Structure formats: structure tokens, C-alpha cells
Image 1 (cartoon, rainbow over the protein chains, first blue to last red):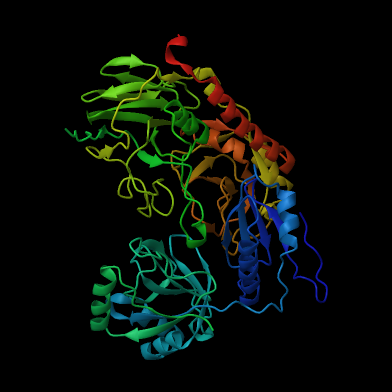
Image 2: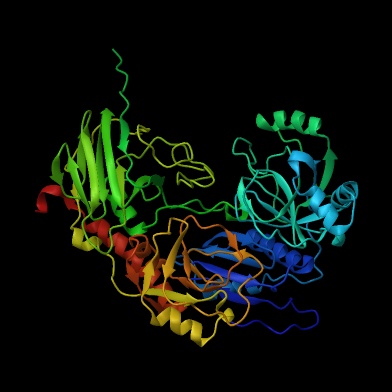
Length: 250
Length: 327
């Protein structure tokens, strides 16, 4: 399938790609970019609102939307026609985003790579913490493992190539950076990202009414806390409480 | 006088290589990074469900390579094993694809596969299903994230599964002619994409021209294939996007991995093609060392095949017979 040329006032260029007979991918580009990601999330909302017969779920990613459907209920060509009418314009206003403030204990046992990242950039650890916690991030996507949030908006002075040798186990709830991205890990995984700190919050807890803390499009800020405060808050999340603060978008 | 209904409990004596509860899969949570999971062979799974009169969204035990041993500790139930496996009930051989009644004290032993190409997985279903609460809308087990099934994990020795229906069923048990349950042996059909533009004709020649061998390093997440290297046109990293069921992803070493039920929701390797839905159940029956070929198809043919698959299940339902009729 091929994409349409971009015209002034027309929907943004995108490609429709078959992903078997159970998924159709709408690809807006092939790079990590906030503008592309906004389009993905806008289309995600529109497809959900349209409640198209046969659509099972959508997976918004950095730069594409994967629409999972039942081939017994809708054909790919019909689905494409429906979705083409839903393509967002670049000028679309974004839906109100949730704004989270997530507590993080930086450095020490919680952030094994903080000092090394600081050295690599000729910064003090305090400066790294100030940069990392001073920025607002956008949740580009949740993926790889349940609740793992990939964040855009890492300040340029902190862009850091990934570790040469990945760690086989990185603790759950690690706050990490890799390349131009930031992330909050959810469960223990192997990773080559640099660990700056750890949040006592749980990105994923089946005991909660809303098991997943973050969703694509949410905004995130980090608030530095002490190791003692980490322990206090971790005791609360251990019993199923949420300690991150959330401000619903206006 | 009231009589408390006795609960029926199935105890795992030996789970074999890997036994998990699976249903049709967990829908709607891939956007949160939760894999779909579900039965690896939807055809055989559906037959197991139908043999005991369960709806197709009920969970069954999916076993791998070796079936394992189960004992009914209390109560009674109707059960069935679907898949080409050797089965004994209290030491006496019984056919698979035929429902039977279990009583307290009975021991069911499911051995190894009985056909050389295509008995990697089988399903043990009980009438009424297992008393296991759905997690995020499904009873399917995803072991890596400890979601679903029995306490989030594979069945372990001495695990106890409570059955929802504690009594035996009336009526003659149903059976299916095993020949009707066979999978088509032809090539596995793929649709190009979503990243077919990362490959040129040389890559396609390798994918479609070679006989691939299933690596032992395969699991419910992905089937690794061994064979010649599939060359990329250029780069082999992409910005992560969604991983569809059946995606044939090709990492830097050129050895393809078919992404199956427990695949991660997103990934960063180019996917040259995707296996069509009608052929996915066949992959679930391949064993390490088995060979397979791919053939390229079109979306029209894939959609027709999806309808044929659905019609086949409807026909199999009609082909169920009271057990006595089949020799």
C-alpha cells in the first residue's frame, strides 16, 4: 500500500501497511518525533471514538498506530477507508493530557549510573538531577513489557548512548535514560539503559482499579526525593496505594 | 436436608515440559505493553473446548511436547484431550479427540506426540472449565509478566485446579474423527509487511526459497528459524512499532523469528512479512528441528482463508459424534 502526497491543509502524509490479516499499521514516519507522536495519538483517539465494527484494539507507538482487527468482521480495504476519513490534521488541538509528578530517589543504590552519566557529560550529579527533574516528558508509548513508559523530552545535555553491555536484570520501577529517550521501567527486565534513579511508584499493579499508571500521551515530571522518603512511599505502594500525583488536563 | 456439593479438584502430578492455562487470548491491553497470549494452536484448542461442550472463550490446559499426568482428587468431571498424543486413563490407553468421564481417584496420563510432524501441543479441557478468575479479561497465562492462569504461572507439580462444574455430565461423551483435526501440511502463507521495504528481492528469495528449521531456542513468544541469512537492504534497526501476531521479524543476524502468542507488543526489528491468521495454528504444532517453508499470499486470499478457518471450526462442531459410533 502506498501513502498520499502531502498537500496544504490535507491530512499529514502517512502509509497504510498490512501487518498480516489481523492488523493494519498507519505509519506517520520512521523517526522519534513529538509531532509524529501527536498524530499517532490523535488517530488513536479518533479510531477509539469511531467504534469501528471489527476493531479489537489499537497499539499506539512512537510513529505508527497498529489497528488490530477481526478479519471475519471487517476487511482490510474497508478498514482503511474508514480510517482514512479519521486522519487528523496537524492543526488538531490535543486532548487534555494527564500530568503526573512521579517521585524519584536519584543515585546511590537506586541509580547506579548517575555518577557515570554525570562524568560522561562533565556535569555534577546535582546538575544531572536538576536537568532530568526539570523537564516535562511526554509518554510516547507503553511497550515491551506491561506498563513500561517510553518518554520523550529528555534535555539534550543528557542524551547518552546506551551501555556497551546491557545489564541482564534491571530493577522494576527504575528511572532510566538511553540515547535521546527516557523511560520508567515497570517490571524487572534486561536493559542497556543508564539508571538514574528509582521511583517507589509502581507502573503496573493488578491490585489497583486502574492497573496501569501511565498511558500514551500523558505528561510526566519527576520530583527528587531522599532515600528515606523512598522507603516511606515504597511502603505505601507495597499495599496498593498510588503515590504519584496526577493533575487531570484542563 | 442440605448436601454441600463436593468440589472437583484436578491435581497436577507432573506438568510435562510446560503446561499453562490458555484461552483465546487477552484482548485490549497491548497498548499497555501486555502480550495477547492465548492458545498457540486455536484449531486444536477449539476442538478440546467443543468436545466437552465448553464455549470457545473458556480456558484449557495447553501442554507442550509431553502431556504430563493429572489426578482427579475429588468430584467427577467430563474431560477431553485434543492433539495427537498418547493418553492413558488409569493405565489403559484411550484415544485423544474423545471425551471421557473422570472420577475421584482417576489418573490421566498424557504421553508424547504420536505423529512425527505436528504434535508439539495439545489441550486438556474439562466440562464447565476451571475455577480461575480472569485477569485483564482473560485466563490466559503470560508467565514472563506473571499474569493470568493459576497465580500467574505455569502449572507446577502438585498444583490443584478447582473445576467449576463438580459433577459428571449426563449423556454419551462426544468424539471427533482425528483425521478431521489434521493441519494442512502446505507452506505457511505470509503477507508482505509491515517493513517489507527494508528488504529487496534477495531477502525475499531467501525467505520464500529455503526450507527453514525450527530452532530449539523457541517458545510461546517467538519461533526462531535456522537457515541461510536473510539480507537487509540497509539498516536493520527501526524505531519501535507494534508487533502483530505472526510477524516474521529479521534481526541483524538475518535469522528470522516468527512472533507468536506471547510476543511483546512493540519491537525494534524490521518485519519482512506476517503469517496469515489461518496458518498461525499450524506453527503452534511444530517441534524443534521440524522444517517449514513460506509462501507469499495476498490480503484477499488471507481474508478468504480466515473465513475458511472459521467455517472449518463450525463444520467440526457438526462432525462431533457420540463416542460409541467411532471405532
